[in-house]
Length: 134
Length: 315
Image (cartoon, each protein chain N blue to C red):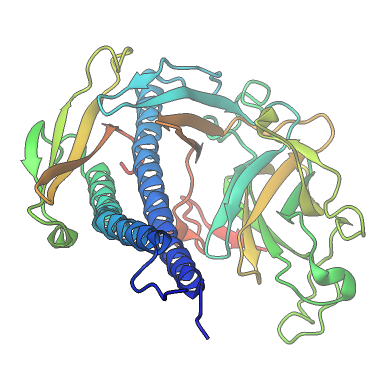
């Protein structure tokens, strides 16, 4: 029988399949790495917001916890690209403080950018006169 | 010889290795996303639960649902960030009549304080209404109920306690100290000659690692188990002493242990504690908070000193 040169059809199909498979795999790698990075940044942001709430809880309710919006800084913010952190204190609305409690609603947020997308972590709580750290 | 079929085996091997790498990367990233989502929900739920506690703490102080109060469920609190607080309540009638008062676990750097006179009426002008404790003895339960290796005569962090009973007689405050060690045989230096008393009852049998269970805090933590039970008595030598308070310190151990004081006979301890509860919810995550707050507790840094308007005698 004459010896046939070149590749068989099966071999060609298999090679094409492997190349496609590896290409797909490589294509999915960047999102996976990005999601790991994203979760790390989320944890950092959450920690910053949590620490700020603890700090605000320790302030004097009457004099040092004014109503309004403020920004704050934290050394950990440098780990987040284009990050900003702020908090807003407002009087407790009647639908929450139904019995006229002397409380303020505190909203703390941390925003940052991740590959062009705006990301945000926001924590809300109440701080009351005579509360946990008062 | 012509090799046929080898290329297929090599290709399969390459595919398997690539698949394994791919799956591990994808699996890890999915896991990370899930963890970070849960962590964020957990933070939001915790802040919401704290909001519930803050709300009820203020309600308690402003509207005086203080001692003698009752279980008061509050309406849920809903925040804009999809977190909410529910099951917010205060129980201001602790301990219940004839039940023990349990202090949350604490270590040797702290102490527990139990009122025998009512903090609202320390001079006991209304003995029945303020539930003054007039008995000459009470029980103290302490120690986490678990299997220590004491059964084998090995020291394994078993706690000892110092109990100070402070009482008032003729306008003077006096204190009486008692010492107990839940570890009986102590061959180690520093503990073998402490002359502490042992337990009246100790959970060191092969089947039960606690003394008989007791109800504490009026059913909030019912059927609680402790490692050691002791009885304190003899602080009313003349009979006219007014028991004021009990302070308990944990000794030797490096871990935290619960302590409870239980009245004897038909007597009851005065009302002295509020317990606040709140549950925060965000997504699938729930965080439950419980705050134990006593009326009029002496600061930690006065642990070794008592301040009295009159003279202070130590016996």
